[in-house]
Structure formats: C-alpha cells, structure tokens
Amino acid sequence: MTDLSGVLRRLGAPRLLVLGDLMLDRYAWGEAERVSPEGPALVLRSSREEAGPGGAGAVARMAAGLGASVSVAGVVGEDADGRELLGLLDAAGIDREGVLRVRDRPTTCKARFAARADGRRSQQVLRFDREGRGPLRPSDLARLAVAAGRGLGDCDAVLLADHDKGAWSGGLVGHVVRAAVRRGVPALIDPAR
Image 1 (cartoon, rainbow, N blue to C red):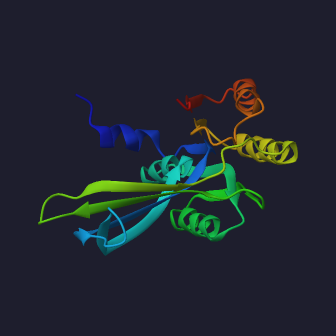
Image 2: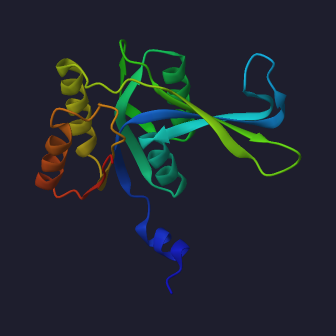
C-alpha cells in the first residue's frame, strides 16, 4: 500500500490551471422548531452559516489545499455573490487572473438549508439555486479563451470542471484541450452529466 502523503510530497507543488463553472456554495444549519403559520414549511432557527467556492472553485480550493499552485479561469457576475467568491478564492491563495466578471449574468449560487429536529442528525431540507445557464456572448467566450490560453502557458496540468452552466460552450473546451495537447500539458476533464 502506498502512503498518500508520500506520493503528494514527491509531486511537489504542481502548477494547475482549473477551468470551469465557478459557483458560490452557501450552507445554513439550524433547528426545525415548528411549522410556519404562513404555510406548510419548516421554520429554521439558524445556528450556523458558511460559504465557500463551489463547482470549479471547489476543485481549485481542494488542489490548493493539497499544496498545488493553482490558477483558475471562469466567469462570475458583477454582483455581491461574485465579489464574495473572488474574496474566497483570494483567501485560499488561488490566482484568479483568468476569472471574468460579466455584467448580465448572475454568479451561480447554491444555498443549502439543513434542519435538525429533536436533537437528531441534520438533513438538507431545501436547496435554492440562482444561476444563468445560457451560453456566454461570443465576445465573452473569446475573452475566456484568451484567459485560458494565458493560463496554459505556465501550468503542469489542466483540470476542466464543467457543471453545464453555459460558460464552456461554443467549442471552448475542445479549443483548450487541443491547445493543451499541442503544449504537452495533460488535460483532465470532469464533464457535465
């Protein structure tokens, strides 16, 4: 059996480019105290909330946590969720130079609410998604292709995390993979369903 920590030490600090759909994941936990008088819904008394990078951002955060030098390329909206996500990427030490801010598209945000009743284990009771899933405008796709190309010039591997939110449409994935192959850079793809 191989010691995982030894394998990771031998890898050193690979330079990774993570491309994909960036998301903000929000979590709220609390006690389900009663049913709302306004309708058949639980009233959740919040006890803890947190947020973190999701989608390709989660892949980037995990790789950085394992010691890789990570840069990320993707799209966020010009909104509060986008600003928060960029701050979370900064806090994780991830180079976000390749992240485009797009005015007419919301940052994908997935909010999960978990409730506990009578001291039992928490269970997710609702997920609320805010997202734009349409394809990017051709001008934004071109900007994203340029950002990905810049990142390819200085990486040891490319990780593509597609969550079917439209950012990697229009043949952009094929373009990036072909460019990686020409440079001898391995490309690992986690495609949408």
